[in-house]
Image (cartoon, rainbow, N blue to C red; front, side, top):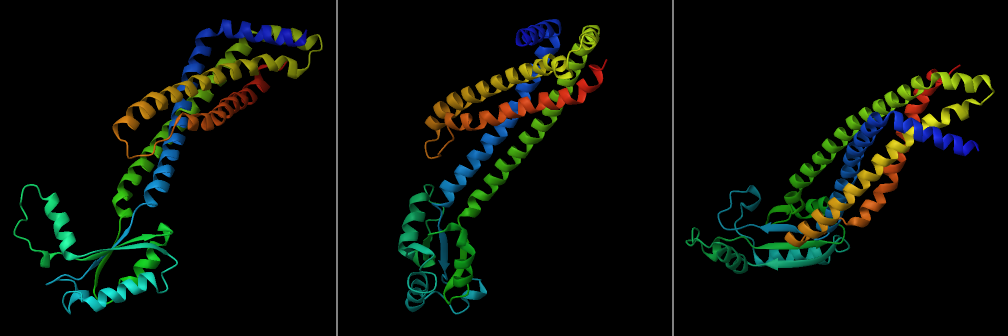
Length: 303
């Protein structure tokens, strides 16, 4: 009987304040969509880092002819210096950090450069003017600095370059996008909580006489407050469900179907990641309604 009464009051309250309830649903939907999008973007960034950082290499460029670098003041790298550098990488203190070493000679570098020079702008170059290099794949890409410090000062080494620098700007941009989405989500969540508070307050004011009668006949405070709390929770949960649905269809059709078919070399997040985020969105929705109810009901349901 008590449950039937509470549910009836919830339905009546939502019907009386249908416009405000719909506003709560829509604002919660938009705000939680931003929250979910920020979480999914961060998951995509982490996935890209794990994938790309594991594939990048360290490039150790050796001294060419007529280099302006002070490290190469003695001239081009010699065969003995190349063997010494290889020995440090493969048999020295770095061997546990190095997974594989590739050597690219001047001739190989020249052939690769010419193949990419379709307009023939650099046709006057010769193999002797190119830089030989070692391409080093690390067991742990995070140990780049250790390898760089150990090889930069070796005779014949011009410069040591980490390919992760290529992706650093991209990751900075993606992290900025995550922060922007999170900031917008915070603003929208605040708006949603204020709107839920207003909805509950209006509902409580419209039924103040009823609540006074219930108090007079001995109804507990929890019984009086429960319908109002559930109204906010129902509206916020509906918004959360819409947000989960929007994120699912966005990832399913924009990411899995379109992006994955257009750019095939990137490992994208999938619909299963949306289901990992969904419970948190539901918790946030219910939490918003609970906070708004606690702030409002203590005042407006007193006898």
